[in-house]
Picture 1 (tube, rainbow, N blue to C red):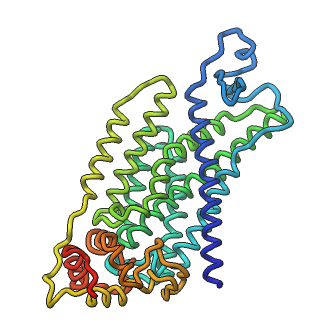
Picture 2: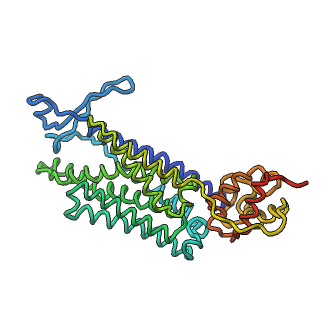
Picture 3: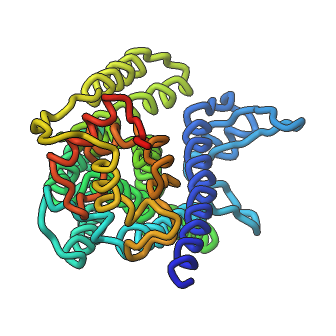
Length: 400
């Protein structure tokens, strides 16, 4: 019962994470679009006299809107200001809870791959936590350095750092855990940007306005820079969130490079839209994104690892015995693997009919990507994989 409650809690937290993430990313997309779409008011107009740097007219949901952005701050502040922060905080907090429930509490199964590095669960969790905290510290120091004033150079260095992080984690954790921890490192940077830079800067601006003292424009500049960074991080993070459904990416021998090619494609496509909102149609950026995606599609195409020749007759009973020993602990109505209360991925392999029905899925996950058994915790051998491959290639027939 306790394990079921933990799994159901994971469901609720995942739902919350998706909802909050939609709200956060939606507001990021909207405000970057808004900034890029603003037009300067005519000189001498009421808006210009008030210090408005840009405005636009929009229609949505049957109504007309006229948002305005001030160069620094308006002459007076209204009593009520709308802040955009809880979307970010809720996304990070729910994501951190989900990370703990799904990965850290099941580190042996979800994070450790003995073929990559023999770690204890605590070592794996420690590496994951350090990657999140260390990434924020390094990124923040980089932004505060003299290089932080050169956006292009800064962007390239941040991308190089995340590439190095992915490479390092790929040599310590299993592929899926590496992907998700690169994502949590980026997500931590994004949320910390809001918590430590954007919101405090805005609070100082508001406090200065209410006190009647000059507003420091540096607070607005820093907040703007970090907000733009968060905008470019969104598509890579979204890819990482859905990547665990596609073993061809995280199980690739150079999975860190696959991840960064996908991230580069996402950044290129995001940059196209940001430029487009300014009225600049830079088609080379989506073209670059398409090329990078094409490279990934080609590079991750199935390439069978040579298996040893099968010794002896390949029978269904032999196949069933292998699956019973290596797979059924997780893929039965009542899994015996610690922490699981239901068949993982909804795949059942405890009856002959289930094995035959899932033969092609077995071939893809066990023979082609070799991602299953997860982390090879049940120690499936290459000889056993060869037996399964031979049986499936022969038609995956069930003997009487």
